[in-house]
Amino acid sequence: MQIVDRLGKQKNTFKILFENNAESILLYNANMFSTLIAVGIIVIFIPILISPFSESKSRLIPIYLLSIVLLLLTFLIFQLKPLKKRPLFGVYLVFAIVFSLSIYLSVMNSQEQRATIILGLFCIFPMCIIDRPYRIKLFSIGLYLVHTFLAFMQKGRILGIDDAVNCFCFLTLGIVVGNRLIQIRVEAFESKRQLILDRETDDLTGLKNRRKLFQLISEFEAGDNNVPSGVIMMDIDNFKDYNDRFGHAAGDMLLHHFGKLLLRYEDMFKVQFFRYGGEEFTGFAWGYHLSELQSIVEALKVSVNGMTNCCQEVGVSIGITDCETKNFRNYEKYIELADKALYRAKAEGKNRVVCFDGSIDCDLSVIEKTFANNTRK
Image 1: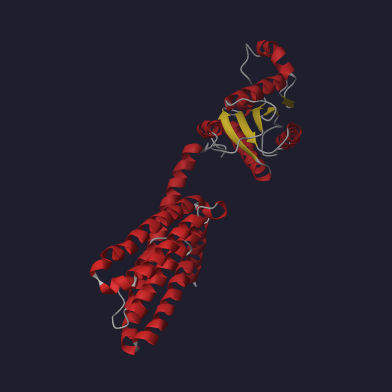
Image 2 (image 1 turned 90 degrees about the vertical axis):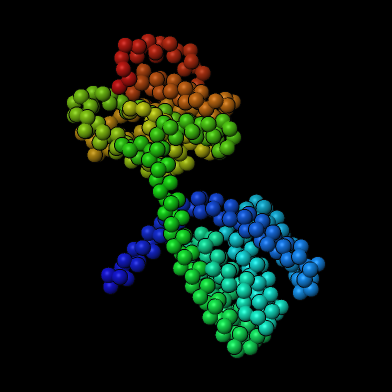
């Protein structure tokens, strides 16, 4: 029973690792797909080059050329947008073409010889792909059964048994080593992902940190990422007084719970928040008009006011701006505008949401004077 439970936990852990590293696995399979196409064409082209010196190779030139054409068509088809994100299917298709060629050579062209090239394919296929192990096994065993059946039909019982045993040995070796390689690769992807998360995540709040914020801004400005429709700046009201009254441990706990609340809003809406510094936070929103974004952050403010795991009621001042009616390529400018709206919220009594508009620029000097001699609380 304990062994069954342990295997179940390992299977569940492996599934989680696959889901967490789906992007890295996709990239690996995409690179492997291109590599297999190139290697496959080169390997198949070699017999064509030596065909003038081999009568048996000359007879197979149409088969070799057909295989090369099929590989090239597969490559071109998987450059189309709907399929480009499915390189795993391409890898299976490449191996299906190469296995078909190998089965033909083994069964039809060399009826008096034992299997050769196909032995290597059964061994290397599970090592060249990252997919759920059961699918790799089904694909490999299916091809093994097809080859074994045809070998018995065309080569006879003696050679059929030899091919069945030899292929089974290489198939077993490939599956065992392949499964282990998949586990090692996925665990390596997970280690890399955790390192990136540690570098980009604020430990106290669980939000992305300032480093990740400016990395994302660079991607926006380079056109490498989907740009946001709005920017948010937030500041926990009277945080210094809270720290002085209840202690730094309570202040850290407040920041922790505030971060958890923002993460819940990330799950509910198309927003992403970052710890900007101290008790200041910023965020990006996608696909919302300014009025819609205001409704979201108003609800967020109410949620902050209702946090029950703090020593006293907590307020938050929020400034927002939209990116749709302005034309700045520098997204730090949008943060600056949202920050101006945040200053206005502070000046008007705190614990409120203010949208940036042109009038804020006119009286910003007054707001700055109000806070000139005070640290923002």
